[in-house]
Length: 300
Picture 1 (spheres, rainbow, N blue to C red):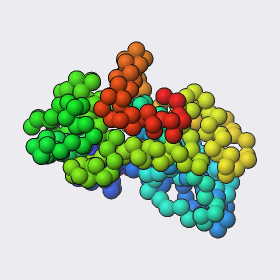
Picture 2: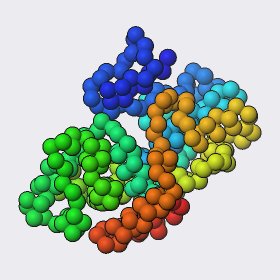
Picture 3: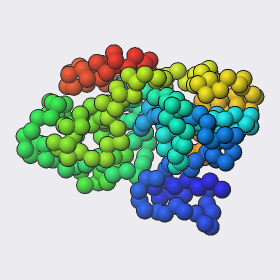
Picture 4: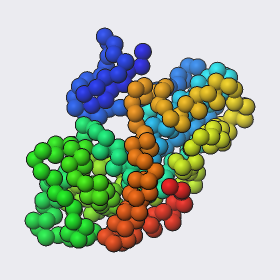
């Protein structure tokens, strides 16, 4: 039985569960392939799906699950691996094919906001001390004072609590500011607990082999194109059905975990949020996100 650990939550309970309620987020799935089932491990090919926070992490893991199931059914000498899987890739580097997931920076900000607003058990990204230290020292880090961020209070024990207390616009300002900080700027104010940042989004979005999250709407074509990197075998009905399930549900690896945020906001509110983020970017952040969008070339 697969066991999945989340902060203070264990899904798929079992008596011999290896999960520990440590308060640390360990929602990484177990390995979905077994090298003993690979026809010839010494010559096996490996498809690597790299997706960072809110760039398609769980989607890539679900897709890898579907592809691995197909490869095993057809006895194809290849495996699919996704970032976060608790397993190593034994294929030689010249037999590994890496696909990088990325997305438009504006939709990435909103997705981050909605994900944390919905509720999590992660601590604030040191907002309490960072905001206080910057303001007390009168240090200007990327127009912090001009952007008028709402400082956290003692009730904001999680980032979710902070975002739920402040207004949508205030929350978007905080998230956009946090994610846009360079590593050097973040280190200046000792900002921690930031899962990823704009620099990493651009790095993934300008990689040689990259896909945009917006491509994975209601078509299996992107997945089949990715799978073609390691096999020319035609898809079967099981694979197509499995891949279609990734459109709306995370049913295979992350059972019961609603990671997506698309349905948390109406199309009208989404458009309003996009316009406000554009305004924040132009007015306070030196158009860092607009410049990143030009580099990445993904649709919202």
